[in-house]
Length: 113
Image 1 (tube, one colour):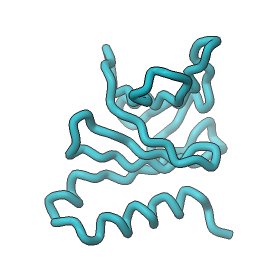
Image 2: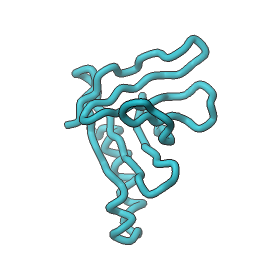
Image 3: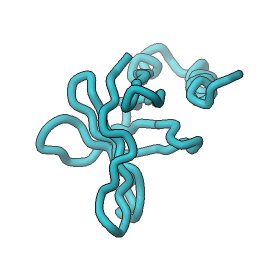
């Protein structure tokens, strides 16, 4: 059985093969174990302004942009509408859904593997 997170990495890796080495080094692939049960793969794209992260969440590919944060690094959709928010600090992260009723935790504790 293939995992969706593996497909995300494979798709993005295939796109990166043709890039110069310097561009490949600005992309970081990290896996997280969230709430002790779910695996999330994050592909950090650090050569853009704003920096971005691609996540595979609940079977969907989500692209988020870095936003302002008092502590750690926060990524969110640029539209300002309902969307996911990915917050990292050190080797931990959390994922929330930002909707009309305010933030709703999707994964509260994600630990980098």
